Image 1 (tube, rainbow, N blue to C red):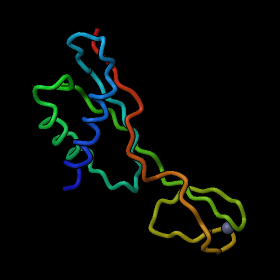
Image 2 (tube, helix red, strand yellow):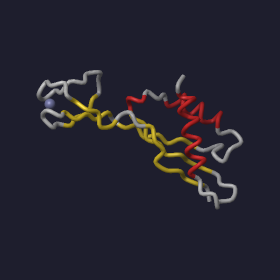
Image 3 (tube, protein in one colour):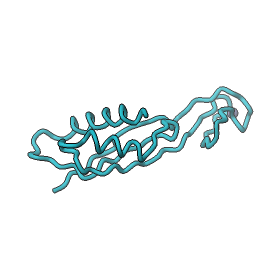
Image 4 (cartoon, rainbow, N blue to C red):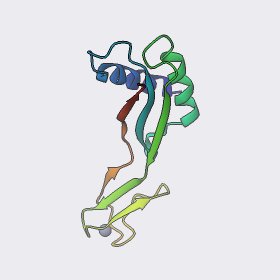
Length: 115
Ligand SMILES: [Zn+2]
């Protein structure tokens, strides 16, 4: 389960990004974007997150995950399309010179603090 490592990194980043001048901050929601190719299982990540955040400012925070489609660009014909299967060949020109634009990211987009 690689979600534990991911959750640890996300929690560290989230804790670091809480402004120091806020006293007793309580985070209500953590907004994330996760690429579909990052192979993150949502309930596993939520489970790990809850364990790690116990007794931190993030305890009780909800994870709001926005899954990002896998978008691929063909360098040969300049088309961009969404990949839904394992095929990584350009469907337009049948070339294999493709680069992935999105789909692997694991990022915190914002934190929502309780008032
Ligand atoms: Zn192409």
